[in-house]
Image (cartoon, rainbow, N blue to C red; front, top):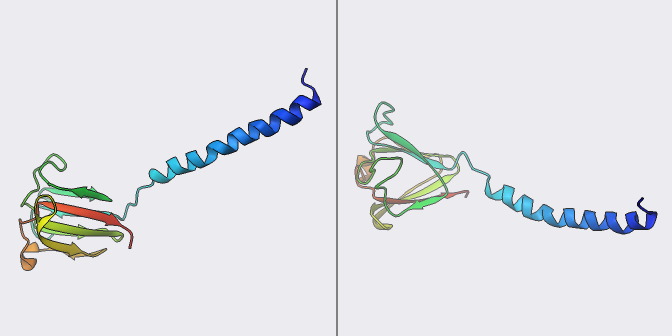
Length: 131
């Protein structure tokens, strides 16, 4: 049988061990949170044509090349974009974040990248979340 003395020593020790693991668990949960409003959706046709190829890219993430994104080579094949309300995107005309840079603001919709001289001219991008 357990004595009262054993319970007085054992219970605080069990509680201390249990509480010391709590911050690790909370940190693990924090890294799993996905901001559903941090994305860019790219279209290979203007005016957000859903009948043609399009792909939603979840941020935050950096792509030095868009060669194999969602099973498609998106290099120089993006004509319109929709940016999530909590995303900031920098797109570049060359791979490895080089060449002409075009910045997209949160919630921005660009139906024709040709009007910005970037139609079919994006090869890399950086997506960041938050303000």
